[in-house]
Image (cartoon, rainbow, N blue to C red):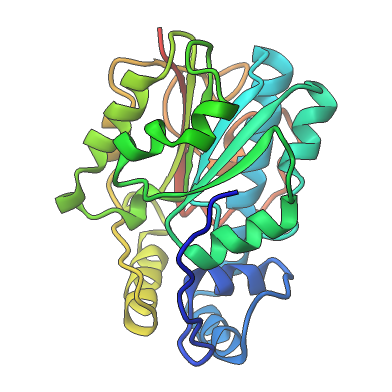
Length: 273
């Protein structure tokens, strides 16, 4: 396993990944994170529900791809400190030979995930930035784990709204798709400026940027849709046409709990034809 540069952890400065960890009941957070998380919840009470809904969609989409599409290779961008995370075990219960590579630019998150999964041959954690897809897809650990000549799933859930327009998020998505084999899937969720929750999303953006080092860039539904131009968009349900969906409307097949989704994020799953 390659060494990575470890940054000094500042327990007095809130970190968004640790705030998410707190909302999800994890233990990898400090007093400053908990205080900032509660202050944010006071301004936007749905924030914890939004975090849980995002994670539920992430896991549900992986399960759907594995069980119905036969996908057994996954590249997951922006791993954070989300706990618990049983994704590899869930995948391998469907495909015993399934493989997954996590990608993150945060050395603390990378160290955390490597400690969690140890030396599994089919699970790797790569310390690279999503803004540099050339380096991501040229990484030796990724290439030794993922067969790029076969279909893969590229997971960009709740990550592109942390990529500024100046960093060309469309170009990042396009490069990921160009690298993937025909039959691969893109899974994407993103904070939306459209809909009834736009005020809450704007408040979230302002609060997070004020108390952490994280920039937040919500986008319109039209902007989010452009990420999957040229791809075959999967209908979000059996009786719907292809297009964007709110997270809890994607492939829940009647299991949706009323009021469980604050409808902050749009999602889409699309196949490379």
